[in-house]
Length: 317
Ligand code: A2P
Image (cartoon, rainbow, N blue to C red; front, side):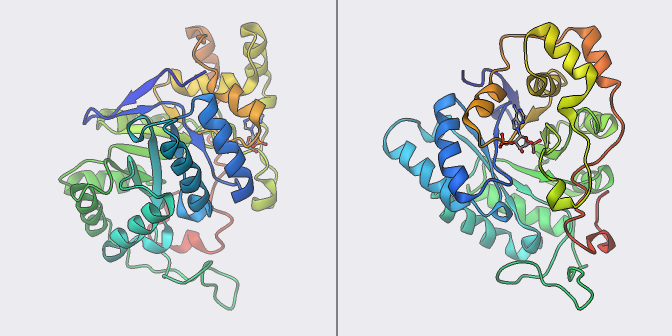
């Protein structure tokens, strides 16, 4: 079943509301899963250089495009400027690198992945003697956004957006931009609904995409701490049972009905099909109210896997 719902950006661009997330999917997994996802009807694909899978995604997309199984216009490809690229002088370089890896002439949406900067190195982050990430603290969002506007004007990115920026940081861009961010990508799910930030974005014509909509199951190992299991919430389970749907489908449909697009990741053929099968039911208003009431301001993806990053002056949370 294809994604039958679009989110329309303020500039008129349409993006399928349900996308395919690829964070924490290895090359081998992503090759198989992306083929399955395209078969299942996913057309919005979300990636980033830090996920280390752009080349494989590019290979699969090329196979589908060359075989005429999909046209470029039908695809909506999103990637992101990595943390070691968040300075004006390196925006074009990193976008071109992603385009080479993805084997595309343009992306549909280019995000600044995080509002902070780390030094450019070949390979993983530069660590100091205390095991902390070395920071580059001169991040200048206004200059950076100008460089984002330039790659948009040059046709390399059809839309430009932000990820993991807070309200103050977004406001600063809005106060200084020629082109507004089309989209904000943030962690969002029943336990971190961020109603104020979502309202602020809507009021300013910025669409919102939720990452970790299922709570990033399996991320415990990376974070080295327990995280709540969203699929086990009794209210979610009760609503799922009533609708004859799974808990995951209720979580995803809740976001769509809040007007938020989302990018669940799954490398499992059955689950990735389940996650896009969301367009033949509605959560009724009274149940939406119950789901909205589950918000507990619990951030799962707090960047705890970047030791020392909270010391960056533009750390957003
Ligand atoms: P898998 O890839 O094995 O399906 P998020 O998108 O919130 O980061 O969550 C992704 C995690 O949730 C992955 O571990 C994924 O595992 C799992 N997952 C994805 N879809 C479902 C589903 N429908 N039911 C249960 N777990 C799911």
